[in-house]
Structure formats: structure tokens, C-alpha cells
Amino acid sequence: MYPIHPDPARAETLPADFYLSAESWSACRDRIFAKSWQFLGDEQLLFAGPENLHPLSLLENYLDEPLLLSRQEDDSIKCLSNVCTHRGMLLAQHPKQARKITCAYHGRRFGLDGQFEHMPEFKGAEDFPRPCDHLHELPLKKWRQFLFSGVDPLVDFDAIVKKLESRLYFLDFENFTFRPELSKTYNVSAHWALYLDNYMEGFHVPFVHNDLGALLDYGSYTTIPDGDVIWQIGYASKEDFTFDFPADHPDYGRDVTAYYVWVYPNFMLNIYPWGVQLNIVRPVSPTFTKVEFLYYIHDDETFQRMNGAQLAEKTEREDEFVVEAVQKGLRSSFYRTGRFSPAREKGVHHLHRLFSAGLGGK
Image (cartoon, rainbow, N blue to C red; front, side, top):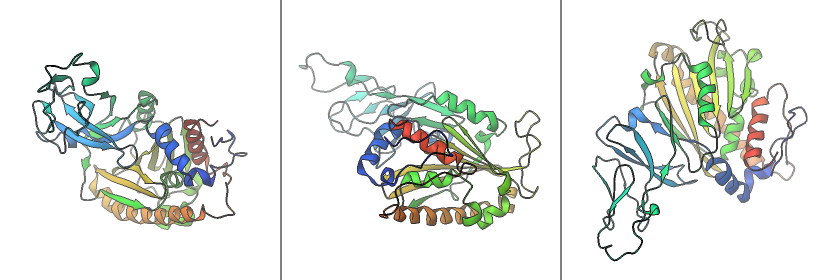
């Protein structure tokens, strides 16, 4: 399904049908998003208070899987199904503190670990309880303070973490300050993959982002595909805003002002000398996407000097204008597929190869 040639000099992009067809929309949900790790939240923020149960929906409006994060007595966390095994009732509707997980419909009770404990009026039930009467436990992974889970993830999470740490190990994300007043969710009238296509290259920067372009040295802009991670390294046009790397860092001695890091399939980190901005792309419909921006700042002075919030807002609105126009253009009778710039679209080519592989292509 949608094979992509391995050589970007010969390859064609994913066709318009990938972004437009109902079949592709469903296939991506089942074969890409259900088989990958999804960002759940920041453990430090989720469990900052006394609440030990946190319900959430895994990719609401797409996967729509009801989950329940449950903090155990030893402070470890389990990710459980938030659906009662009796009649399918949601077990928790909001964060709360509780000693047990009890269904408000018929009183079925589970331990905080999801194990069935008690059910009223079931004395006559044969072959009960069975293993399926426990709450299903989903895999849960953590990178730094960030939690990830998935319906049936096949991606090697530890390999992703190793790649992230290869360049980001010197950043103390755990002590960065989350800034809720800056964080926001953008509504984009375009397919989720169009947003990622745009994110994956700096080719458009001189044409679309004049302010961002003034910060970056376009000629040195570097893209490094690395399995389920794609790095984009932005070098500074001036020496004012650059990272202070330790001597053993692979980019030591280079004037790097930004890392743009994508993790399969919809999690990104925009890392600047002032801190990090998480981007989570959440599919809603084939023509509508929500993009969450979460700000973590450790150097407010540099953030202000770089006009961090204003620059991000302007850049995002410019990106929205582009991808929404592409969404309309894909419906043209005269467009089927495009070609890649071998020099500037290595990231997009790699992205399309990964999506093609996830869907069963080559």
C-alpha cells in the first residue's frame, strides 16, 4: 500500500489518495497509531496532588481508547483499561484519590493494580471470576518525566530513548518549568500527515518564515533520519542564541540554535537554548487536526530575548496557512503525487517510507 522508492532522487511522495481516502484514514489508525507509542502526559504534573487515579482517552476522536493511570502504593504507575469488565462502564470520569477502583454502575471492585476483587450478587455465576474479569493492563513507558503507552505498540521504545539521549542527555528536562499560560492547542484544518510533512523539512523556511529564517543559517540546516526518529539541526545565523554543549557532545563546537526532533508517529520536540516545546499531533478527521504545544522553560531571560512565544505563534500560523492550502490543493483533478528534493526533503522521504512500511508497503 503506497510503496515509496528507497532513493529520494527517484522516489515519488505519498499520493493524494493517502490524505483523502477513508480507507487510508482507517488503515493509519489501525496500523500506525494503534501500533505505536502515544504521549500520555507529564508524570510530575499528573501526580503532583493527592489523586492516584487519572482517566484519559488515548487519541480522543481517533483511537478513542479509555485509559486509567493508577498510582500504586509503592508510587509506581500502571496503565489500565478504564472500562469495567462487567458491562463496559467507564470506571473513572475525573482524577480522584481512592483506595480501590469501584464501578459506579453495579459495584464491581478492583484493586489499584486492576485485579478483580469483588462483585455483588454474583454468587450463582459459574466459572467466575476468570482472567478476563481483571482490568486489561497496557504497556507503560517513561522517558524522563514523560509517560507513553499504546494499544499494541510494536515500536522499540528503548531504542528511541537511546537515540534521543544521544544528543539531549545534557538537558535537565525534569527541572524545566512547565508554563501552562503559554501552552495551547491549535486547530488545523488539514490532514495530520500534512502537518508532519511540513514539519519534516526546512526547505520552506526561506519562503514561509521570515522571522524564523532570520534565526537560522539555511545553508547549514541539517536533517538526519535515524529509524523512528528524525533530527533537524538548526544552526544559528548569529552567535547570540546557541547551546552550551559539554565537551563530549557530538555537536560540541558548533553554533546550534535549535533541534527539531520527530518521534514516530506524532510526537515532536522543539528544543532551544531557553527550553523545550513539546508538539503532539492529534488526528480528529481527514481534514482536521489538533496540535498541542506544551512549553517547558529553564532560561526565561533567553526565552524573552529570543521572543520565544511570539516566534512560535507566528511560525505556527504560517505553517497552518501552508498546510491548509495544501489540503485544498490535494483535491485537484490534476495532482496525484510529487517528487522529493534529494538535498532538502530527506526527512519527508524518510517519513513517507515509514508510513508506507506501517501500512504494509515497501
